[in-house]
Image (cartoon, rainbow, N blue to C red; front, side):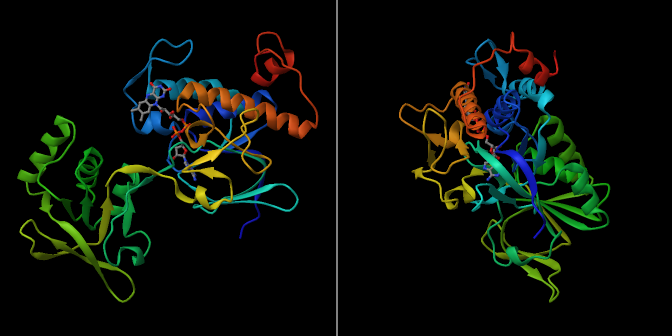
Length: 345
Ligand code: FAD
């Protein structure tokens, strides 16, 4: 296993609360690494409601989900966290010497003095295809939610099946059409949800015979002895088995939050939330805090505002734990030290 990178603080989850946690740690002089399963920051605000309005952030009468994420990114810019995106924190274990070792699904290992779990309603991960043989496929033959560049690169010269019915699936089929030898769009029914302009492009390419729509459900995969993908086993709308040859499968079945491994980290929980001390937002393990939607305590409300308060007290608690004594309150308005950290002095 790789030598872990030393970190003052690791923030798990780059939702609004994880982002603000980085800010509060920065004010305390604690540099943070920030990890998220998604390839971008913003958590629920970016993933579930980027264009919807939010009206209850103090001092911001109205902004969109994505707008709030952009403002938070600007606010934390002086503290430039080390980002580890597109990877899920998989293991977390307190070490004998008091530090905490974390590993991610991308093989990143971090040895942290403190950890701030801002994991919200869980890690946003792509929904998997549940069919026989899928898990044993050789790497690179099935990609979940690849971006346009990755999808087109992988599709070059191949017979590609794009699986899904929403905008991401339609867009991927359109993106691959020039590079691929053949593009099939596979969905359980002949109805796709996407912007009218994309649906019009899809229709034109279908009529031109460049994209074929296949209606069916995947029941299994057929592979060569070396694990190479050869064909999909499908059930058509009449319930008849069909065989569809291909070289590459791109799956866009949506992204949804899953609590994932957090329940295995040995931290005290109540139902699916981490229990915390409301003076410090510490979990049951020293140096590990939980803030935002992932925690629970008497009176808890799952609001961004409440998460911001929690992140503030957690940063104070960790700074005092590291200092070994109580720290005075300083204002950003007047503290030279805080202004120097913010880069505005
Ligand atoms: P999240 O935003 O859920 O972010 C958590 C992040 O952690 C995710 O990106 C996830 O991928 C990541 N993560 C989890 N586990 C791992 C792991 N093991 N490894 C790596 N990454 C991990 N609140 C308001 O205050 N006002 C509103 O108007 C409002 N409107 C809303 C509208 C909708 C439609 C929804 C769904 C929610 C709304 N909320 C609103 C609630 C608000 O979005 C949440 O309270 C807020 O997003 C919680 O922030 P968070 O940072 O704690 O978690």
